[in-house]
Amino acid sequence: MARSPGTQGYTSQPTFQNSILHMSLAGFDTLRREHPDQDSAIQRLEQVMAEILIGDPAATLDERHLSSVTELSTELIEHWLVELMKAAALESRVAWICPVTHGTSTTERLLKDLPRRIECQKCGLHHDYDPAQIDVFFVATEPLLASLQYFRDQR
Amino acid sequence: MKLAKFNALAGGAGQYNCAVITIHGLRTRGAWQKWVTLPFQDAGIRYSPIDYDHQLVLALLRPTWRADGFIESVVQAWQDHDEAGLAVTAAGHSFGTLVLGRALQRNPDLRLQRVILAGSILSPAFPWLELARLGQVGQVLNEVSRSDLAARFARFLPSRWTGSSGYAGFTDGSGTVTNRHYSWIGHSDAVVRLHVEKVWVPFLLHGALPS
Image 1 (cartoon, rainbow over the protein chains, first blue to last red):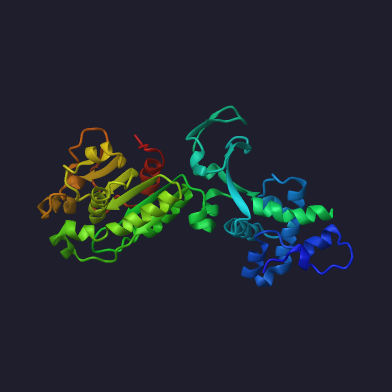
Image 2: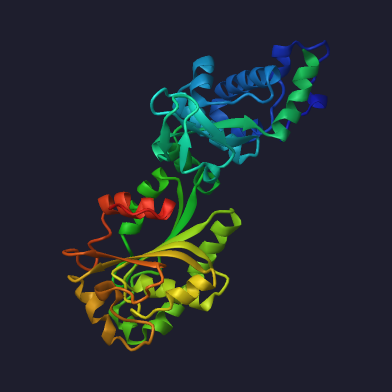
């Protein structure tokens, strides 16, 4: 069951950290239900994501950064990000990675919208589409951003 | 996250360039349809294998009637991809080419951007040009081999829609069909991993063929 601000049970003004400990971002209840033995790890990810998104609601979320901040394995974060996407808390985006500079040449909402060939903004060369050069990252959906509101108000 | 990893985790909710439906032949359940998952997934191609179970060669006594019995599973797979907003392609082997051809003939609203035929038993006069004019098919790659005896003898099958196109090619000269000739491959030899990666995947993605 989703926890709401009204059921938190605080008698004193909660701190930002405390509020995160007692609230669920959209999608995280699903994650907890699916992995009841991983509650503390899920809470760590939830806390980090809330902090990132409060700072920048349009922030991109990727497993490497989240893994380094949460100290959870990249593999675990990858699985959970996809589960959060399936729970409609995140949306995926695709990035064409320049094979020369390893920077992002271009991004799109959908893979099928990427061109077959691009003139790279990073290195100035032309690159042909290569699936191996495509990275997927995530952005927050409206429901996830809406569920941040409570945390934002507490800051 | 790499695209292939993401799609392996996300399944139908992944990021895809297009979709492909594959259909196997008779006397097999199409083991190749399992291993092609990986190259398709790596390339960002959403994939639906059609498995109509192991069918005896007796099905060839009434080939068109038998093939028509499997059309619905093709249509369902197509609808699933179409609803996801993806351009749909298809690849058929042997009897699967007849199922594919009949699915297009019986469903005027079925649209396939690209089609690959391996060991085709469709008639060389199959109306690809007409299907292209109706907007039902974009490009067809027909893999032809003079070593394909099964396709060669398919001309004796009792149906106007069957024939030796896997042996002799299609007669359509409109440019819709590309008959790509191979000297030594037999009836099932085109469906090997390297060939799928080097020929099928680029063709399904972009309509491109290696020189």
